[in-house]
Length: 347
Length: 277
Image 1: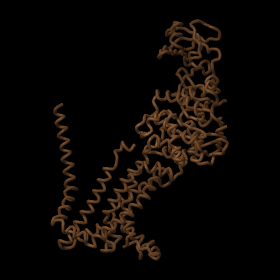
Image 2: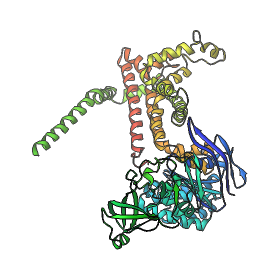
Image 3: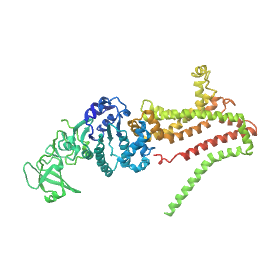
């Protein structure tokens, strides 16, 4: 185990940021801490880095108890959301900083900096000041700076949060490739489920200061153990007291076994996708269920507004039983509404 | 369209004339008159005045008092700024308000309060200091104290906004890269605040050279012992004789010249706000 977190708790005044966190992170793994903002994931990362002190519990890095160790002795690479570039130093100076502190010989620093700038594709920018770089370039510089000290673990706090969507996607794929190349144990914090699903080997979902679920991306997506994880990792809708993914609902214009009859109440075409609100005829009071299918399938079935239809979850669809009432059923429960989902009371 | 353009031009010119006129009457003309009076009889009397031992002594005393006051204010100014920006503690707001006190309180009051504390005969700390062999009031240490008091806010008020603006992330990054507190300060914090600090230092130097009221009370103003340049100006100005007024004007002119030079140098060195980012 590269990082061993045991019984960690942290309060800010009356606010409980983290409660009794146990987490082991294997050497060489790329782990995502995923959750809504204010859920405690950044605090946990900062506690591992030593930038924040836990009230309770212990942190072990590479078999060494780091709980009382100051940040500068933990040999941890940390990348901040807003880059934290040293503004008065050029790119090479930024990357060399940790090595100069470690009193490396000048020639070796030069060689190491050149090697790292090569790795992050910034070789031709070595003499630029951070102010002369784009956001993506600055973040790559910050990554090279963190990697320069050959850290035992690399921690990234919302590393792509301040970048625009395209650069974000690019850097995400690049980080994955970089990790396959460098293989340093990496933990990154994100509130973007797509980012976590795409990049991570393992996802730790954190909400209200607690770990909700840990597992590989596909497992969390397919077998969520709580309403929260189900709705945070992807779109959900309600059908007969269960959360179901809208793309896991089969829709036909004729009855079929175990199907619920209903009527198309809303027909909304978004790009390649068709979104349908289905009002169930058996339970008029229930919020309509959302069904998504691609445009070709919708055309093939000749679906139209107001048409009677039958819907049922496909075989093997992930479902979670609802134990607490959900505010709105038909809306696509994505990131923007995930915060309002009540914390589940079961595990 | 044409009408508004004309009226806008008219407004702009009115404003310009007003501002320039105001500065002319309040600052430029009076200071220019000092220069004219200084050189009214040519260069020779000015050079004579500058050779007077009282004048040389007064400027030496002023410069050394200003130097020490600036050193004190730089060290404590940076320390207090860091305290105000980086830490929360009970009484922080009070401290923040206290820092501005020297700007608000009359220097004469400052002088009197220092006498109350440090006077050898009546001050509650002065007696014991004097027994230990350190005379404060009517001596250079008092002059330095008074000068430092009066110019204290200038460094802090320049440095605090910059510290707030740069935030703590760079310092945290340095720490996580292995830097100690001192290394972080020397390599990250200090370079980030260097222009603000320099500007504050020069402002407080200019202010220190010109301090009069507080220094007058704590120093006693004895020629060749505790008389600074500003006190010399006042004394000579009130005495009779052309020679005395030339000395007064010469000293005043040099004080003004140093202040203006300092500001010009700093303004030309200081990069634009955008470039320092």
